[in-house]
Length: 472
Image (cartoon, rainbow, N blue to C red; front, side, top):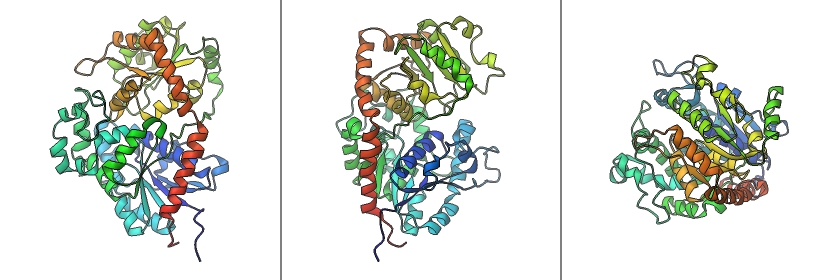
């Protein structure tokens, strides 16, 4: 008797970084709203920090708790289950432990016989698990399509291909030789290239480079899904499909809906926002993955002070600060009290970005934050730090949606650079052009029906036709 393929079951395994886990969560929720059952695998501590599954979807989305294997003398500190818990040099040991999840993940797949496994960039062992369990595999990229196009097809991510195309950091400072759609600016800057080259192409404690991991997932998957849409990245989607010669499917931007619970302490913050002019306030926030140094925090602070523009700054207390008072320059809060607010710790970011007083956002250029900001039509002030952020920043500037903060050759920036970028994005003719482009982009980025209905429905139809597990 033929199986009813409407009851799709998908297993997801994101990499243990919140810049990956949150998009996977949003993807899971979008699928569940269309009746797809999702098993979301990660570690117990990570689950405790992820959003609670909406009660009405509790029968469709389930967090699967798999303890992170402990490597004796592995270099991973106790409680380090996500990159946010670790110093940069410790992340390689998280990869080592993450790889040891393969047996428990395989056992779970065998016990459930899902229709699809959704893999992230670093789960290079999942293609073998999918093959052994006779389950289709989808690679879901939390990165932009243009960034993945810049990185290239699997043959150039593996060691032999690296030697031909990416042999030096300098090779990353120019667009790649495939495709003619890359503008000259879409490349890493000289100060970014060495760190990215070492991080992507060098073997670490896990015994394999990140680029090799991605190559193995791409070679072993049946389809590549991107958190994007044709309206914004159509030409890059077409290019990537030509590069990898496999189906490439946009899943939509998965724009989040504001829904964070707030306690009473936020009353004064939103009261202050209510008193500001429409689209006059700059939201500042750099997330948790990159740890800002004291010099960086202080130069951002002095830049905000120099700009004399209204701001609200979401600042996580740095590990180098012995007290709240040390987090910011002496007297900064007092001197800027009439212009801005600094919020230490967690903030209801989605609600703040949705407030009509917000007009621009200064942040690290992560793709998730770009989506959250552009869905409200805010212009972008870009200060990239790690991984894909530099490429994202240049792409956004090419689109006429933002300003990138100027830097010295060594990557440093000053308060004057910050202030100049803030004013350029908020005041004058260029600012008006950027704001107009951002408002146009909001019609795409904020279109819930387009992303959560059209794109997700098309994806589900593809998954049904291509991967229903008839062995159930």
